[in-house]
Length: 230
Image 1 (spheres, rainbow, N blue to C red):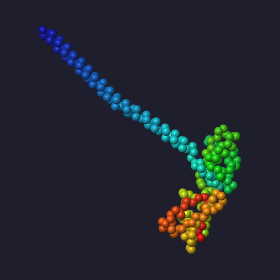
Image 2: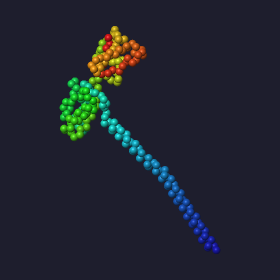
Image 3: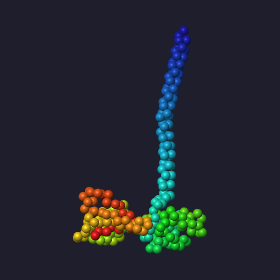
Image 4: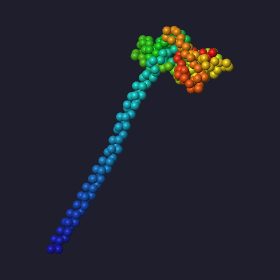
């Protein structure tokens, strides 16, 4: 009887040990699954970032293809940046001459004044096709010197000035150094050239404008406007 009891006791101990091992293994497996589930989102997180970065690059590239205003008309003395892709010997910054033309290697003389940058690009590219396969030309107006207005009469510095930053009549008077003695500040006027060759006379009362009365008189200047201070 004593031997049988010992055998039974050993069997129960062995059975309990097996259950403990299995329980521990199950717990370890469950913890491993939990840790893997937590780590999985972290590994996949960087993927969306690469998708969001690509559209921004595409947008920047497309915006750079036409960096100029296609409605602007080039004039004499404007400075142009002309770039021919992969042709550094032709690419350069060049002013428009007084005759309205520019000169480029392989291209020769080209009429620039009176044309938009886009039209000038097309003209230069057409002439380069005899020398370069599918030339890509970009024309940017670096400096606008052709759009000017005049200030005449009783001001300290009469002359021609380049229009910049939507200049007004008050801006023009300030650029011209202000009034001289005995200037008729209430009788100033702007002469504006019309497309048919005629002129329009626009009155400007300096005294009223500086006091905040009738501010609509302080108009934005256009190319070839002339401010007369009697």
